[in-house]
Length: 73
Ligand code: SF4
Image 1: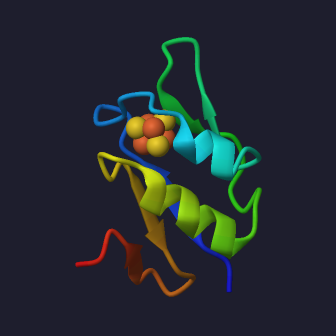
Image 2: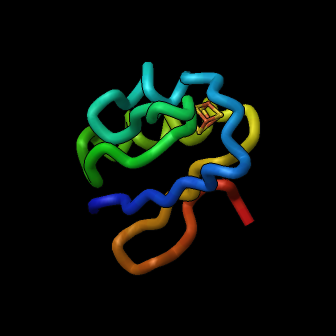
Image 3: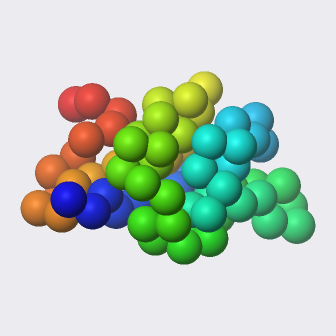
């Protein structure tokens, strides 16, 4: 299973927890907004934890079939 992530930059408030929990997948850019550093940079577990840590749900996680894992529908 390989999760695919999408970030909603307009929603990001630069809390940074996603970067702490999955530093190879997410990073903050010059504007201090999240961007994807590398898809699958971290384990699925860490990527999901990072997404769940986001206070504004700015990270969308899908599995390889395209099913949305987080935020829960
Ligand atoms: S946890 Fe959410 S708000 Fe914080 S940097 Fe990541 S995407 Fe942005």
